[in-house]
Amino acid sequence: LQIELADQPGGSKKNHVAFTGRRILAILDPKTVEHKLVDSGGMLYTSKECPVLHERHSVAYFREDHTWAHKLAREAEVLETVSKAFSSGILDGRKILFVGDSVMQQVFGSIDCLAQTAGLREESDRDNRDDPNPDHQMHPFYFRTSRGGTDVFYSRFFGQMLKYHGAFGTTPLAEEFQWMESCRRREPFRYGSNIETGDRGIYIGRIEEYSMGGEARTLSPNDFVVIHGTLHRERDENISNMKQLFSCMEEARSLGQDPGWPHITVLSTLPQHFHTENGEYSSDGANPAIFDGCRESIDLEKFPPYLEEREIFYGKVPLVGHDLHLEHMGNYHVGKRLDHVKAIDCTHWSMPGVPDFVAKSVLDHIQGVAMSESHSK
Picture 1 (cartoon, one colour):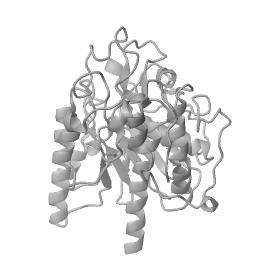
Picture 2 (cartoon, rainbow, N blue to C red):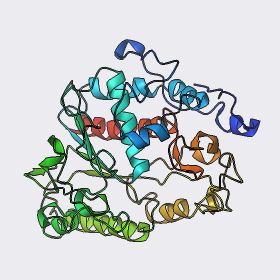
Picture 3 (cartoon, rainbow, N blue to C red):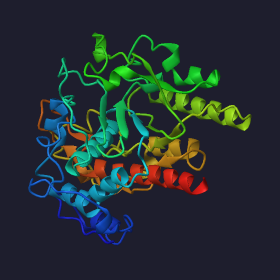
Picture 4 (cartoon, one colour):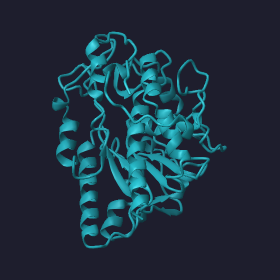
């Protein structure tokens, strides 16, 4: 499959060369895929058809004017991937948990929106925007597929693995929901049932925290967790927590003491394209009075999260998203936001676009693991 990217404002041919001729995915047999496209000017979904993000992020991320990003999502056939994943039966009855910051939320949001476009999202009265505190950004999300009952979740605070702006999401989670503690005790990993209910967890009040309590739901070896280290100041602690969990699980499995933990996969930190030496955020590099948009390309060999994760995780634990060549796609970020945020946004990606491309990579990995297991039985 060859992709010729649409012209981008301020783009250059080297951006196009980086992708033209790359093998993005195996072409699927259209007879095995059932889907429908929304009538939205070539977009696979819009914020109106897919109310998955809270209002502020919907305004910021959904960009009808970023036609080159829509083209990437269409021609990479991400809708077909989601359709096949949730209608083939391979993921029936499984749970998929996304754990991370707002970039991970975009990846979850892509899957949610695409499942809805494909007619595979179970309808309910529990709209993801139906929150009693709609301005709060940290509430978790959840949906169930209409075929096979795959449950898909997003939260920053599952397992109390990640810190975010100084919070673990509650003070603290009950021990039965702390995955490191569960690993030490050789117990299954659990999460609180209130993420599946209309209250979406009890809002605590300070720095937009939500409790993750309720009745304990147990994850099984059939389930998947996708986690990343985030791009926030607590990243060092988050990466340390992830390393400790993988080490604990490896030790337990070597002793035959795995009680039935889920598959855990690391999503590589997606590159930023601020106007700095390594692409990372700085207030000067995001100054809208100086810059109209993001850098087109960065050198991944100078992007600290990439180097760190290559050393810690590559070849040692399941890792996805590290080989997508997003370093050449700075123009696919949100750039100038349409909400109240004035700074140039070279962290988040316009939707539809790169989050769908990343979601496809995640689902390809999950399906590959599931199919490998089914063949080994």
